[in-house]
Amino acid sequence: MGKTLVIVPTYNERENLPNIARAVLALPVSVDLLVVDDNSPDGTGKIADELAAKHPQIHVLHREEKNGLGRAYIAGFKWAIAHGYDFIFEMDGDFSHDPNDIPKFLDAAEKENADLVIGSRYCNGIRVINWPLKRLLLSTGAARYVRIITGMPVSDPTGGFKCFRRRALEALDLEAVRSNGYSFQIELTHKLWRTGHKVAEVPIIFTDRFVGTSKMSKKIVREALLMVWRLWFQNGLRRSPRARVAGRKI
Image (cartoon, rainbow, N blue to C red):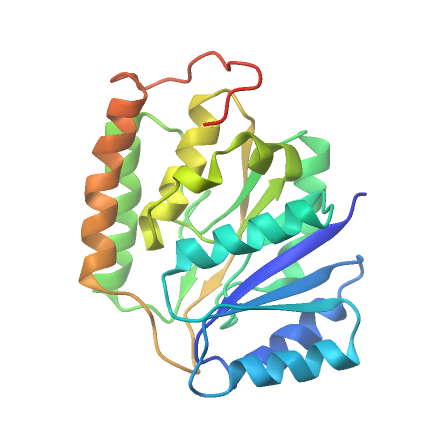
């Protein structure tokens, strides 16, 4: 198994971060943690620095301002590639994603030789806890919307618990990614799928945050609705993958 990094973007997560770090370090597999903090006014960045000083597996990337989830992950991806990690995770910092699922992702990546493994809330049923019905209908409706327009056979295209192989991220033109939120998750998955990269899903239980506040907004939803059509046009109005062009960034 190669070097593994979990990227956790944070903004006002001081209540959750120490527990997230403890859970990641306690895993039965060797995993490093990168906290990407967007200058949290509640002092999350300072707590991250204190954790990093105590644990060599924890690293911190400070950004000057809150600039969206997608931009935070792009910064984390670049850091991971520069530091030679083989498996790079996206994971929320509020325990909506269970760190104990990480070995399951790595196992799926190895067994299926997958370039991307997605933690699915809707694979073989619905596994969501603490969401109001309106939020659940929005999410499941968005998943169906993406599948219908793009043809991408992924049950949870807006899910944010993911494991990328290094080779998959290196195939992406990270500078060309401009989306954030739901649309960021859809864009990266679609770009890899449409160029023939192997995408796998593993079922997870998603538990909405009990501490802190959600970053969901109407702007994020609108961006995702428009992004899906843009991706369809980028794929030549196709609803199936195209042949991969060797050496070409996507």
